[in-house]
Each structure stands twice: as structure tokens, then as C-alpha cells.
Length: 461
Image 1 (cartoon, rainbow, N blue to C red):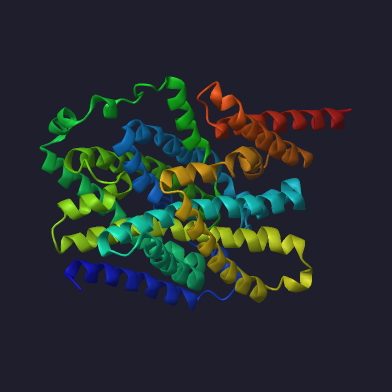
Image 2 (image 1 turned 180 degrees about the vertical axis):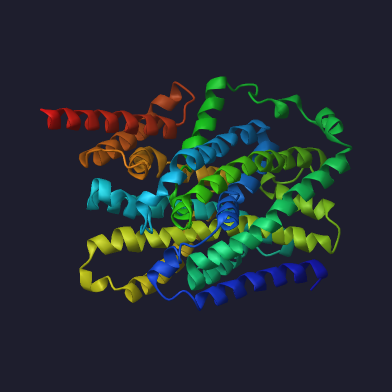
């Protein structure tokens, strides 16, 4: 075993030791889901940042830029915008949801048990899909550096994440996220600046690139298609369960707002740097598979000894996102589907705790299957978004802000978003280059608003 592999192995052992340590303090379902809710500003900032800077927004970002141009990275800034909006408008009001451990806990007081169950199912499906994106990136990474087949690489990566997240719950996830955040925030810029130096500087890089790759609106595209992609990233991952969970575990809402805003600001340079690795690879390694941009650049640029630390940082990018979506999917099934559909005698904390760990394992296996069929991690993310934003985002924002709404409006908005996105995907997308996610969110909002207006009118009469 060479020096770099030894460094990566030490990193993996440290992560697993954190999981074993946190397992000693994780004795109940609440410990597993949200711990003692006593995490400070840096912990929230680091875990939130590490969660969304996953394989899709790093590996998938670089791959898309390599194939098609910088407009993908610019469109990703829609995600940065929504994080800052959440930090400003929603995070400071999370005190109204003390005691909640899941999206369903937020929805039920406003919309009832049915909304809780639907929210749980959508949480599970979207989280499992996004987890699949992270595992796909992990498979590419392990395959490139260690020579295992893609399938075995995915299995190995999944096994590591499954072990520490299943044992230690949210405490293990947050503590490992802080370590992973420090590594990834150093590793990615290091690869970028070394690559830029290899190209002779930014001006030399630009001179060697196809003009097409530097256009925000590429040839054959349109402003409308760019705006559509930008809005997909605004709405697609807004308030998905891991981000809601991070809002629920903070000890101070004012600190939570600042930490969330800073996380959104940090994502702007990170997304642009990660995407620019695709441009560097296009010049330095034009014949590689686009999905292998990150690991191939590391192999080319990083010297022996330091390479192990950079590989650990890239592993951290994926693990920090995968563990969060894995954990939240299991919490959603237990808290928001199992509990409301079963008798109270099966709701004791120890039983829920054991079940959550089992679901954690099963979800990991399901996510592995997803990433075997969809190769690009950013494509998996967009696929998973279809099971979240169009059907539930509008209702969740209203519940988080404690807006006065009717219970029936939840189902109306859900149906409107579902039907609107499906019909648009079948017919409308052939007419205008607008993603069905955007149309679904708009349809959800319109139906949701109309039903609430009618409810208020009936009440006043």
C-alpha cells in the first residue's frame, strides 16, 4: 500500500471511529434524528455546507462544464440564492417548530396526518434519489484511484457511509461533516489553482478553450432555457429533509440564520471553482470520460504524499452529502410513515430507534441500485427534484412560516403540482424549454393559493 492510499485509509478509519464514539451517546430515536439540538454556529455552517456540496454539485458540475460549458456552474448559483433566502426568511423563525424531528412533524400541525404521510413518502423518495447521486460519484472516485470496478466501488463507498451513519445517527453525521468540510474546502481550490498554473494562468486557459464553453447562453440554447435551469436549482433542493433537519438542530435561531446565510455565500465561489475544473480538464485531459474529471485532475496534478490528503478531501465531498440524505430518508419513513400508520403500542422509542437503523441500511441498498442506472450525478439530482419541489415545497414553506392555511389546500397543491409537472413533461416541454419542475411548482402555488382564498371566503361568510 502506497503513502497516499495509507492517508486515505487513516481518514476512513477516523470517520468510522467518530461513528463508533457517537454510537455510545445515541440511545434513542430522538438521539438518532436530531441529537440534543445543541449545535453551535460553526457546526451548523459546516454541516449545512458539507451536505449540499456533494457529488452532484462538485463531480456532476465539473462533468457538465467539461461536456457543455460554464453555463451549468452559473445556473447552479440559483441554489446559492435559495440558501440565502432560507437563511434570511425562514431560519430565524424555526423556534415555532421546537420538538420537531422531521418534515412530517412540521406539516402535520398545519395540514393533518395525511400530509404527514405524503411528506414522509416524498422525503424518502427524494432523499434516496439524491443519495444515489452521491454514491455514483463515490463509485467513480474509488474506481479511478483504487482500480475496483464501478459496481464494487459503489458498494465499498456505500458500506462506509452506512456503517457510521447507522451507528451514530445525526451526531456522527454532524461531527464527520465538520471534519469533511475542512478537508473539502482546502482540496478543491488546491486542485483548481494547481491546474490553472499548469495551463499557464487564466488568460492562457481561456485562449485554449472552445468559445462555446465560455458562454452563459451557448449556441443552440436560449435565455429561457438558462432561466429554467437556474430556477430548477432554486426550487429543486429547497428545504429538502436534510436542510430542514439542520434548521431543527440549532440551539439558537439568530445564529442559525447567520450560519445559513454564510453557507449560501460560500457556495458561490465553490460552485464556480468546481465547475472550472471541467474547463481545466478540457485543456489538460481532453480525452477522459467527463464523469472522471475530478479524480483524473488529482492524478495529474497532485504530488505523492499530498495526493492522499486531497483524495480524502474529495471523498469527504461525497460522504458529507450522502450521510445526511441517508439519515433523513430513514427518519422520514419511521417518523412520518410508520408512526401514523401503526398502533401506538409499536411507537416506543427503542422500537423506533431499531427500525430507523434497519431502514437506514435498506435505503442505502436502494440508492445503490439508482446510481447503477443513471450515470451522471447531476442528472440523478434533477430526477430526484421531481419528487420534491412540485408536490410539497409551497405547502412546506407555508407551514414553516406558520401561515394561516386550510388543510385541504395541501392536497390541492400536491395534485396541482403533480398533474402540472406530468402534463408539461409529456406535452409542454416540446413547445417551450422550461423544466417540468418549474411548471409543477407554479401549478402547486396557484391551486394552493386559490383553495386557501376560497376557504377564507367561506369562513367569512
